Amino acid sequence: QIAANSNCDVSETSDTSVPPQEVYRLVLLGDPGVGKSSLASAFACVLSAGGCEGGDGEADREVYTRRMAVDGVDALVLVSVGRTQETSFEECCPHGDAFLLVYSVADRASFDAASERRIHLRRARPTHQDPPVIFVGNKSDLVRCRAVSEEEGKACAVVFGCKFIETSAPLQLHVVDLFVGAVRQVRLHRAVIGA
Ligand code: GDP
Image (cartoon, rainbow, N blue to C red; front, side, top):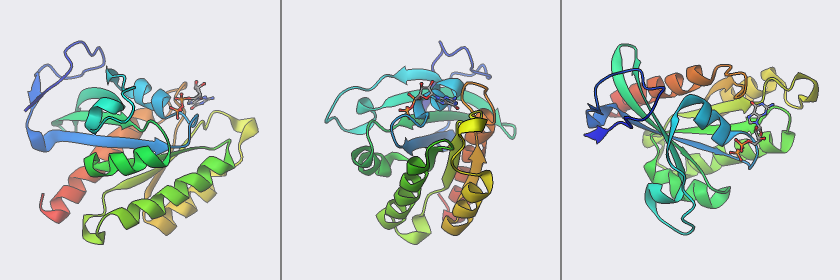
């Protein structure tokens, strides 16, 4: 069992541990500056700040944690933030139960990069083990700078067989929905693969 961070002031349950099957490792991937850390910290408490270059496992990444009930069942959500672009993608792969591919709706290049990552991710695992992936269009509050429409994001997600959501970290718009949705996706996936 994994202990929850007792200092976490957003924790919504009183128990200090959950069974291993209720631990969810969610990995945020995306170009620098799209808002990965902002989303993670808007949702959860920091567990480790990372910074160990060249390290292996969780120690080299920012990790956030939040314990919460999802559909009435306690879950411990661990959110990892990739340090860099492609290298962290490779490193994160073995550890994630679900991947949240983040782009900024105000930055088309970051949207293209998210699509590229989806292709790499599909190659990285056999199809039947394909983990849930969610396309996340962050910075939806930047209405006047928008470079990628919501329709385009949705269409791309359909092509790649992903879920899709738009978020705003500072406005806390759909941030909880994003992570709760990811937990639900992992539960569905585990039921399908019999994990
Ligand atoms: P990361 O490099 O992907 O982890 O990006 P950060 O979380 O460090 O965010 C980069 C910058 O974008 C910071 O100045 C954030 O305050 C800002 N930012 C993050 N999310 C949003 C958002 O949803 N809306 C707006 N307007 N700014 C955001």
